[in-house]
Image (cartoon, rainbow, N blue to C red; front, side, top):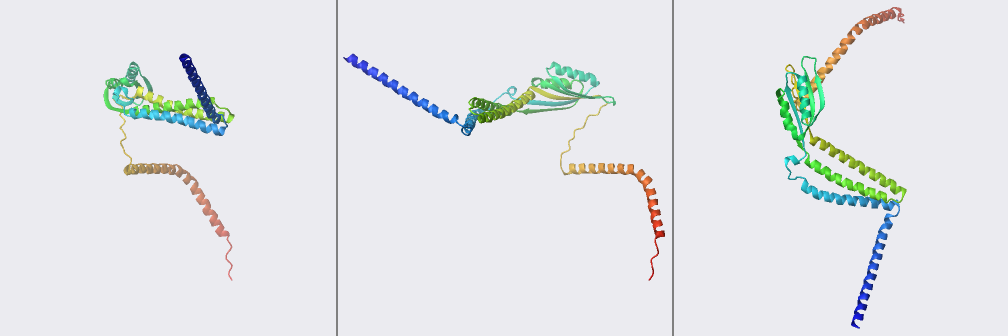
Length: 308
């Protein structure tokens, strides 16, 4: 008797649990259905939902990336782990510009780089060459030292720019924008009307364009940090080096510029007058004679004034 009573109690408990589970499933299904009904409505209801969904995901992703940026804005990185743009220029006086230019090209190729620009001037008694090299950043210093040994070094300038924070910021923005594009595509697949489809396609296209722009900026920074830029100026013994223009803007600089412009204008005016003077003499003298004769003839034929 006790066993039968226990069996009945267990069966009753299992039946009650099954009934409760069924009620919970029905309530959850009804909740899902009630949430899906507004999204399946017209364009006026789905468009704000799409904006809220996209904005919510973007905000959550932005907050996540914002939290990561707080620790990545000033990371404790070694120099070789940071994103640094190296640029330099060097002027070398050599015995033969053509031979030295060939050596510069060889140095660039041996270091894994290439010549991005080559401008040469000759035939005026002083040969010069201006070459732009793109060199791997890791070999920047060694290449500059090799270039200095081609002849007599006259000038050298090296600049660096740390763009680590810009790279970190771009990575965070690209991550957020990628999430926004994916959310837009998901909503596009759930569009139920033509108006919603057009609106979501336009939104996805805008987000993809913004993502492509961010990725292009990142590629540009990656190119500048991976390959340094060196401008090499080669001069032969007779060439004169270009003097740097250190004039700073200000009142005196403006006064000097205005005075130079005035002198240039007066020179142009004098040139024009000099060119017109022969024509004025050739045409002006005969015209003056004709005018004088016509006036004199009119005076002779004029009747005398009547006297009262």
